[in-house]
Image 1: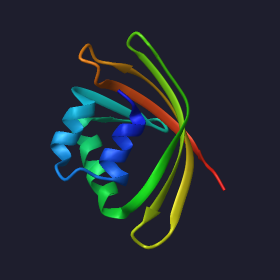
Image 2: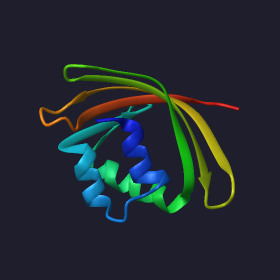
Image 3: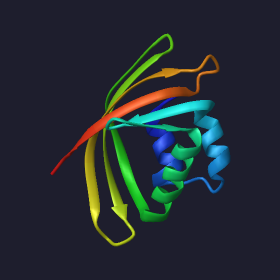
Image 4: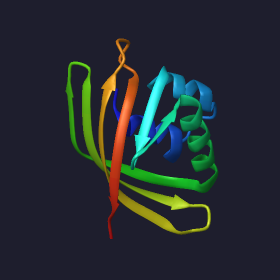
Length: 115
């Protein structure tokens, strides 16, 4: 499982069915922590749905990625084009765990804006 694939399928080249795409990458008990705030899977799904309305395209470039058993770590840069024409570019750091079936069980992330 790679977070870059999930980002592409969820935001940058979105698959039509959000629920199926979430099921592909995230366990039913998935939790997501971003900059100190933790979301359950339902809150994460709502956040992704809102993001899909605002993002019209983008890219993700993986800088580092490591899987060790059920532990996952990754660093990437994404550039997103928004519906209003602006772009966002951020470097993101992710640490988490994988469920026994290989899907993401928990991810914690933080990031910085890149110029």
